[in-house]
Length: 255
Length: 303
Figure 1 (cartoon, helix red, strand yellow):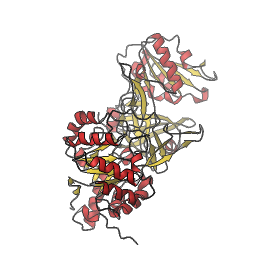
Figure 2 (tube, chains in turn brown, purple; figure 1 turned 30 degrees about the vertical axis):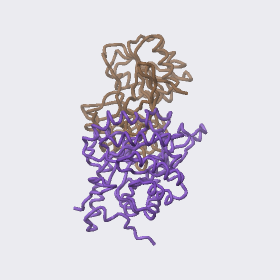
Figure 3 (tube, chains in turn orange, blue; figure 1 turned 120 degrees about the vertical axis):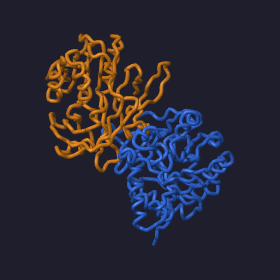
């Protein structure tokens, strides 16, 4: 694996939903090397730790990367204050990304809230063979719907209050959607339910996880997640290097 | 150009910067950024006699000027290290330090014996990990504990022996003296300071272990003070660490009495830190007209 640290100029920035930022940067070799589902580690000036931000879109033609992230604390707050023309200090691309396999299969993309952005680049590869089921709190929180539609994906919304699309959980909304493979990212309870559905339907499923992270490259062993080996024994793997994307059968849900 | 070589307990390092244990794994990840020979040495991830799974997540919390960690000594065990990691590390043209932590004095001694039969350059005795119930710090916070474990391991260790001290003590000078009288060839200091953060919304500690070890820039003044106090008490060389993020910090710790340095947390924000710190240090030495980095050690002019 090859990493780069690079100053990446912000060429576009928007705030589609209050507190969620949509930022495109010129990323040179990082964009050339990036794969769907990988992440980048962004330096926050004055902070000890970088912030892992999932890659939403990769444009190899323009060598740009798109990030869509939510303010979750002081670090992401600071990252949201960068303006077009400023540069992010980016370490990346990191992690394993999604294993897309045969993109002529019917793929189901299940995203919850800020777990939606990491799915877009992979969904793009499947185009009209993809169905995206995207869950949000309400209509005002919806992001990236047009983007999935633009790339030909059948796009269904589910909201907690029914103010847009299906009234209820993504796992109920996805029930009747045919699929050969599932890709999912979102809050742990949602992922757990998606994994249960995948197991019940016997469909392979890849999920993208997050954890508090330090080095981002697999050296410090900070971002541990409980995993299961083929022989059933369990161990702590690491989201940054073994993930962030995991075969759902290897993940042990804790707590 | 000033000479950057330093000699610690008979081991010559090409330069005084050593990667601190636990921040650098076994070197593979940062070898993607630069040749590991950029560093004077690598103190490898802390080893235990048997493989250790480590603590449940979350293991990390950011703090003002630093971070807490409670990884809990996750490692594949000393035998795996010797068989699978050491041969590759040995080819990297840098000094290799094995960091060991035990549950009992016998475990420390057994690991020291195993490693004495290998090509490691030095053994670092970790008696200061704050994140496991057993595994070091119970030996590291009293003078009798430090002297006892050091002298026990000394009898089983034919490699140069460095003892890594905990800052979670009331008199660091006494502790350093105890390591010296136990037979340590060198001291490394300081390990992390025990800390805690609480999520004010859930009212739960951010780290699953409840407490964790504080590292990062916040530690620098404590490290400088403690290295200075220890240097006033012992004759054996001190490898200083704690919050180094730039060359000026490195100079401070050398002036306080360190003969070499370890860096760690800074890798997480800036993987290239050692390259930048060495460049700044070299330029500082040249501007000062010094011939060797060793001329800085202990050259503080205290009031």
